[in-house]
Length: 312
Length: 312
Image (cartoon, rainbow over all chains, first blue to last red; front, side, top):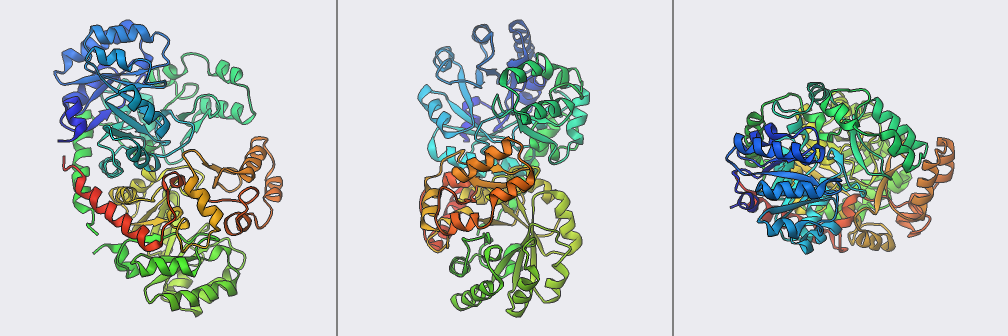
């Protein structure tokens, strides 16, 4: 049996990325109900909101689900306490050192997965005792690594370096790319953007429409000296890009970035001055679909493409 | 039968990228003799040198081979005349509009393939009547597209857009990534960097060693406003990057770039002030090997990984 399915107790090795402002209980429960692993994106939730989403997810699905926890979140200790109290079975951590919370989570019986963008952190994950790794490439939406290593380059390298269960992320939105991820040596996939443009995601309808409309070259990884992030190109992106090009200092960038930009864009639907985090794969997303249909389409295309692979 | 093998009359759908300074007759003949398609890189050859390499390739192999022709090359008309005179069976064109020379080459019985980095040019290729397309992602070495679309994102998009035979390039250096390329919908792969670090490539031994030593994050796509190119990071790269960061004008960049930088680095072995074009996949290249061993290793890993793919 596939190690990722076994580790999480799920039917298909498809994890829905726990993204800020887009992945509440409705999306997580829908993905888990369809046989994948749904994740609540805690990075945009106050502790009590997170608790509410966890409880609603438990009501909406009897299947395993998890929480994505960015380790740089200011109220992280509260988040962890709630996750333990609410007996969340699986936690994906990201944006930080896996050494910090893995032992505590695992001592509470929680399966821990950490997201990395290079082999250095993959090795740190093994040391920290995580149960699985997500290797995320340059094409992924939102926050990203400094090395710009793409999924195609990254996954075989990490596969060669560590032997624990491996999930690929970045550029995966169809059955072909899911099959490619498995060919690269991953045992599962984490899919973000494709699920943002689902019926059940909490992204604002305007943002979903913008993803469907996006073409090649309409996202870019910027803020490379501050905190690299892939954004959909809009006025907000252009302002940040201009400041970056003019070699603005980090404090200026942080000040202009301000607070609540991501909420404004992705959750409240301000397509002009809001921050819109999304992956390159948006160019290949043409429709807003229900989660169950996204997953059944992924699997059908995966199987069809697998049958076409030449033996050589 | 695989359409790429059929089109070129080769055993395995593996094309060796026709790279400047690294792909002379010895490399092209070795790849063709091993059952792939070897390409002579005309971009760094004066017309009479190209003729010499074509003649030597014909002596060294009885298998099909080709020439890679960057369409921006100043003596392009002479190159084409030599290719026609010498009855080269296959030409890969790049860096230009496929409309310009495809008809002339095809009227001489030559199979024409064009390299693209986006769907817009893929559609132009179909209009121009090329026989196949190479879709090259952001992770590839040397010259590259403006959109930064990675192989994982690009290939399924191009596959959806055009139905002619499709070859993937960028990030492919092992059997796993070759299988991934086929999973993405390609029918063959073009491999560059892995063949630069081969015994038969004409790259300087110092350059080959530097590829073997390269780790993640040691290449970068720069000169994005002039002509995007992925380089190995050395003093030359750092100077160009600094000028780019300081918003140097195109004329300044071109002047500093100067002439002969690529030859100096890749062919003459100046690792400090020479230009070193190589792909991200260099981080996953650990040995200089003979071409026959590179290809047999690729195929063995491809087959092993194919057998591991879960049916789901």
